[in-house]
Amino acid sequence: MKLGCRKWVVNAAFDISIRYFFLVMGMKITKKQIDFDYSYYLGPNYKKEMNNDRKTSTIVCNHVSWMDATVLIRTLAPAFAPSEEFR
Image (cartoon, rainbow, N blue to C red; front, side):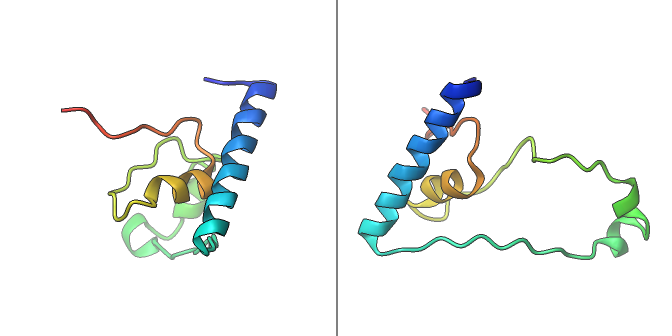
């Protein structure tokens, strides 16, 4: 795990390279936060009782296209990005 200056440098390198990649490909990424009311499933006071962490600890998603890794790195800036699983 990279900390301090090294983490900033790695994140900046990813950000610059992915921005350049999308510029060359003629694409644009936008990030939108959508708040959904889960009170039907979690109860009426779920927002008051839930743990308000600043970031999500684990993100699990299916691969939809070849661009998934680059989009996730650009929008979420993860601590690490695992590659394909070896079989």
